[in-house]
Length: 608
Image (tube, rainbow, N blue to C red; front, top):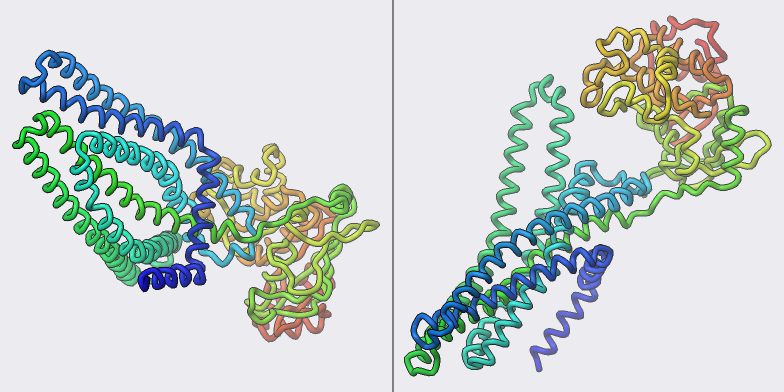
């Protein structure tokens, strides 16, 4: 009674802690894919069960064969030998067919599931997804997904196969020797007890292992991404030591996990071996008494082994299922994040129709912006950028300029107020994933993908002609160096555009944005690597390319603001439009006097 009460309290505690609910939700999530691919998994399970039945048949045929050889039933020798060979050959062919079908099913399911989860991840709200490191996401999409897929494919078929082996062996043994069947089953309670002890520890260490594997992918990715910096600063030894430390940590986690696996394996094996000896001894005793034949003894000992082996295999499926649940939970952490809403409203359709001829205005009204629960970056912000304008954002680094561009793109959501787009004569449309079609964006740093220059440019306009690409490159002041390359626009950029200078990469990125031909262009320090003269030409060309285009730029150099018709100061929790005098005052505090005086005073409202 006391044991029952304690057990009830333990279950209640697990329910209250949410562990059972979490486990159930993980199994239901896996079950969704099992249901989706049930015909394939069911067919594979049937093949596995056929193999198990043939295994049982081998034991039963062996009895007839042994009895025929020992003289108990000599007339059946030829038939028994033929049946024994036939069953063995059948197992070979079924095993080969099962392996082939398993590969086809695995590839089919893995591609479908990975694509489904990739869609869910890539459609996730950017602000929510930014909490995860790229390497971690990569491991969840590959390592965790494959763990789930392998278990979806193997758990149910393996379980069905083992149950067939277990049930078939039990029926045969009960019919031929109930006592021996009872002896063979004596190890079941002990195996269950050992597995129950291991489950908690296995879950703990498996979770640590998966989390470490994720961080390890991120660590390795970071090293190779910054290899130039590591070598330039002489940090090879430092990162080698860090890598060695991580390998030692990996070894420790693996050994700790293996320790509990081996404890369970040793206990289960010792019990199984003891039960095997007992069954074998009991069979010899019955043979000595003349109760059974040599063939019956061979069959019963084989069936006892099958019975014990099947039960142990079912128990051993638990760690595998546990790993699948942990991986499923890690995937669910990402796929359970809020999705972006890309619904195209009637107002947005009208804005898109008129944008080409009228341009698009972008505005913020009483916006409070920030990340998570952190203190807001600024509050009650007012902002306007109209067609034909170049609007500048100035302010200390890290205090809100890039954040503002993320708000305009709908990547970051305001804590209060509204960010919207509009055209003359139409209503306002709040920014969202759907409004991004109106924007081209050039962020800080490298944005080139692997492939050729032409491949990069055509990402936003796949049908663009070579003439279109050339015009965009000329507008971005990039054609001069591109045409001198061995393969011109078909030159491969290399990983991260490594064959080009920062200024060249920026101009190719600007050309891509110009080619997209959107009504709004956002430049985030996008001309920082250009010389002043080239920067001025690029900005002029952008406006000339489309006089109705709205351009928003963030920068630190006066050469950019000399082109602007409106400038906003971002910093110290504030966001406000400033005049030429205030801009000059800010720049004098952050730039050399030499830089301030080298600009052309005739460029624009904010020429300094």
